[in-house]
Image (cartoon, rainbow, N blue to C red; front, top):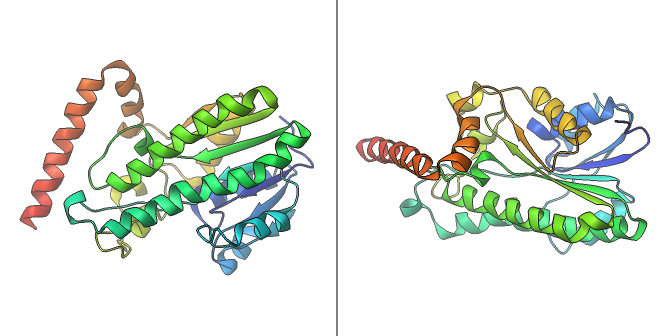
Length: 266
């Protein structure tokens, strides 16, 4: 599939899957618009992208977003990738943490998509993608806010596809399992502070460049939902939920009991 000459806007492009996608699309001859909060980190990633623009912005500053979209200009592909995770029990989590997660993971990509969509509809072409998670399909302990936000992402973009798919706009949801990124270390704890340390299951996942290759293959194949992962057990949960949801609920319940018991002991 040829992307030469297209403009691809990627949020959360300063690290992880976003950085991998920036490199992958850059190698395909596109102009990549790299967005995130940290200009220096975006600049470092952009060094590996032949044709690029750097457009830092705060995703939750909704008042500033229309001007950001105007600055970005025409966009062929929008990839909503920026996000933040969580590691805390619901009973311990400050309500403000839930608001933060929903703002970053759900309302920010919805608002950006709504602002970019009119230009795509006007020309009758475009592609909107959203990076969700296995947590957007499966409930997992210590991630009540993250799971809620990613389930909402799946719902919004699946529904959006029904409205714009017949008008030349592709909508793709991306469902990563464990990818070696800093998502675990940056996950919010009960009081909203970052966890600060990585996790073995995340560190054992596929690389961000491998994830990007899977995503581009999915785009080329016309997939509307792209599972992204290696041979880790988390990917099997997607099939289990379809085939035997009660077995999945039992499995995740047992996992949750173990997590709670460990936290309460410690």
